[in-house]
Image (cartoon, rainbow, N blue to C red; front, side, top):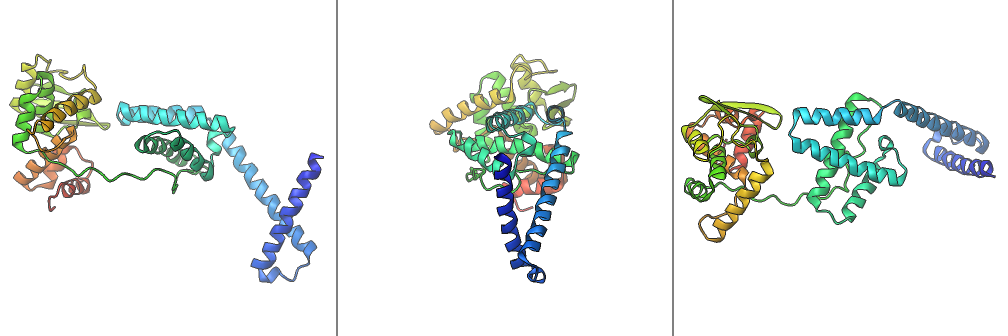
Length: 322
């Protein structure tokens, strides 16, 4: 009975393809219906053969091993936050594909869109959904480079939530930075002084080490180092923190949250203009440095950017004509 149903469906498919061949290929229009249907069945067989070959190749890929390699690579070259985000994204994707009975590596673009829509339907914030989709997409892009027959089903998707307009970049003045420093508790004040004086990302603070006249850390997977301004060393010592690892007991989100609470209190009291983020201290550093030297290469080195073009885009986003 099942074989008869399958044969009937194949027959209908073959007749539909035969009609399309006759319509789209005038040179074959003179063939009889039997010949066209026979040709259509050949097309169907070749399609099934290609699908089978692709399925066999996917079966040779060890998904769990590739997943582990991808996450290990992320932990070596990126921040711990990046690795956690990738892991969470794959966990959500795997849970959904398991419920649907779909092997992850066989995910189609349509199914990828279905997963995104399902994730959006759970009431998660658009930014959280975008982060999850970006993590899954990054995994498939990585797989593409290792397996020629795999394609990223998330490429070109329209289901991903749109980005909200970004907050206008804000640059605190020197006076506002002084107010922030004066109002902060000693450990946070040391962090603010460090970010404001050398333009360090908040993610670089937990790994910061001061050795003599130099500082070193790792941020976004890259080593950074430079000369230590005297006021940074002074604030670290004043806070009773060890120079070799002053912020090792804190995470970047913890520092950012403490800064946010301080800013909210000061902005509400009318002491500063904006609700600045920790990254705005980096903005202020970049603006002051460029205005002092007008040397993009010097700013690039200080900020730890990968290229001069990245620094130029960064400075233009801050309203500087570069």
